[in-house]
Image (tube, rainbow, N blue to C red; front, side, top):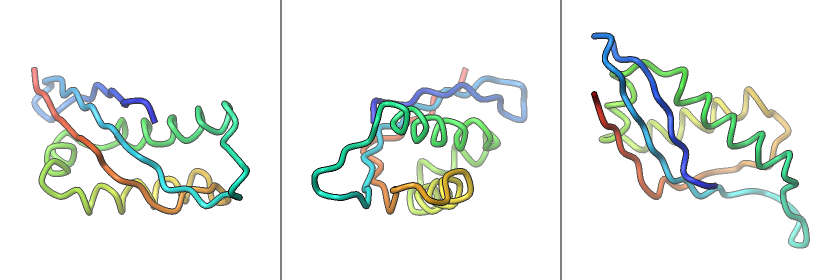
Length: 98
């Protein structure tokens, strides 16, 4: 996926900027690729995952990537139950506060 950038609001009404680079592990046929529509869908699912988290949880993900990965997988399973996502790798994750 291309890097994902999200702006969220912390409890103190300060903005939090999250950037994440994620590699997806998909279960698809060897000669199959995701369509552009599917790429947009999975990117939006992951964007919405971060957008719907409180600022404190976004901060905690920097130290607990396992929790973040599990959360994304559960979120994706609810939002695209028959989707091809089996796992993912967090290449980089950064939180900046304003």
